[in-house]
Image 1 (cartoon, helix red, strand yellow):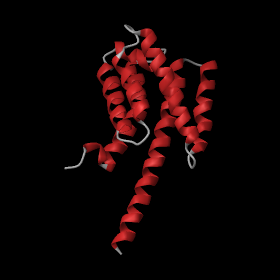
Image 2 (cartoon, helix red, strand yellow; image 1 turned 180 degrees about the horizontal axis):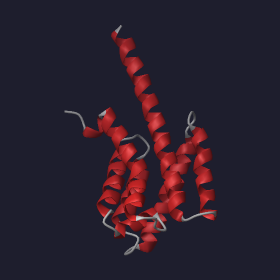
Image 3 (cartoon, one colour; image 1 turned 45 degrees about the vertical axis):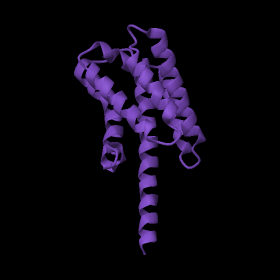
Length: 161
């Protein structure tokens, strides 16, 4: 039996969950200053599950184990009890995610919306900056994963012929 995360649709669902979880929190509870503040609401299970699933997804990818572990730290150390650890880990996670996008050869163009997400901070709250960055990270990984699956499928068919 294969690892659950090896399933194409499970990976896609994890990425969609990561992308939509902030909006579910926002629509269900209202706007807070940052995504992490939903930890103190009834949406804590969604926040934890979305981050845990995303960490698991990242752990399954080559060269994404460090961001996965850092995202786990962000999730484990809540902002209200471990502010410094949580915030430093969150900043490191977003920096490493940006570097991963920048290092990508074929998908480097995602760095433009990713960097632009930082400018949102000048006009709005950290929440909207985080949401825009999360959406960009999810789009980047989804695009890469779909393309990888297509290439892998073509290779498999070619070997069978």
